[in-house]
Length: 216
Image: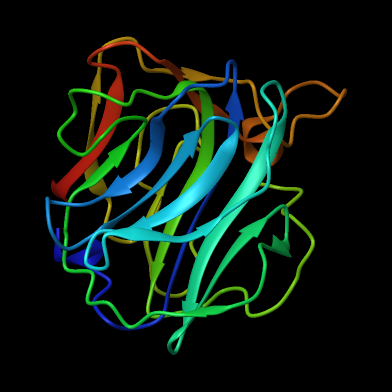
């Protein structure tokens, strides 16, 4: 969908993830088509934002751990780009004005859907096109994300694989990807999907991924 092509404007791509192991290379959110997109991946304990037009990582985090929830947000505000881990920016801002025209979203694998499978849980994937949701350090979300203005995709946050944005794009799960109640927001009280949210489980093996398609 053209909704996923953020162009040269502001955008926010965010999610929460919990890796069950440390992979050498696995993609969490991949919006690429081979030449004009970006990917946020987890490799050797580090999360990075890779820009395909510039053929390199704009930002990479310090070492993260398996068995912990992390909130990740990649934000472009004008030409300033930041990568936030749990609300804290990684290093200083860098400048980026790339034209990200790729229009396909793959969650939990490479955009070709044949490698770099993610092992673990991915929750509250949100793509906001045209808005830099975060422009400075912030407190990581403590409740499920909502479809704020300009949200083009919001998924892995409910009791089924649906896009809760206004676009209501269709989602195609492959392999053993599954909805689970395991959530970064779950409390000790009785589980409530409206307040505790959920996540998608990815077993890190071939054909396990989720990708977004055209509007319903």
